[in-house]
Length: 281
Ligand SMILES: [Ca+2]
Image: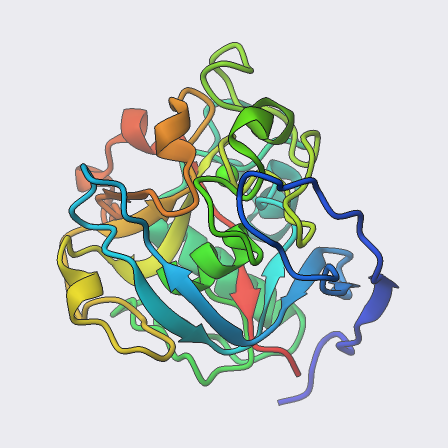
């Protein structure tokens, strides 16, 4: 299959400023490189490695801390914007219309469809079967992050409640205390130590995984990909009206994916967006 676009990465920066994280554990010594896709979307090259996923928060039965290995991957530096979504998909489903804001009110299948469209545009293999919603992790194209990948990228080497210090959340996140009950343009708040913006707050972010409360007790140590089936899919990071606890790096939420319009609760999903990942070349 000949690529419609010649895929090439442009290294646009390796020296992102490290955010201060004195209360949240020691981040990696250097921020990983940022690369730009042919369409100009910035992605962060997350290094392979071990990290402790979850937390020991006493009231969170589904966050059992456990050691996880995640292979290296690329992840969008920003939540997918309405401008980017509409350019590829021809429409903008968002409740809060503004091109530079994250796309919201997006069902899980719509996010998967966007991933495939983005893959096609760049001559990459599509990861999703849009009839069964199965994900081909060996495909070269885009998909949603696994829950483990999302938390690895969010934590960026930190071990605390947030990827920044507890007292610094307002500088890093749009949440209940910092915005007037609506999402904001991506990238306005300070990034995490690996250069990702809005991992805490703004919009919830779909993950590929089905949700199960007990999954961490039985998940594989390497590259966990969630239960084989389930009724809901994981969302992470909190949103513009979340209290701080729901914006934590390890906080798990889950939503009806909305495979059909009938089961799609627009009021709920109005707060959900996503960002994409793919394998590095
Ligand atoms: Ca977010």
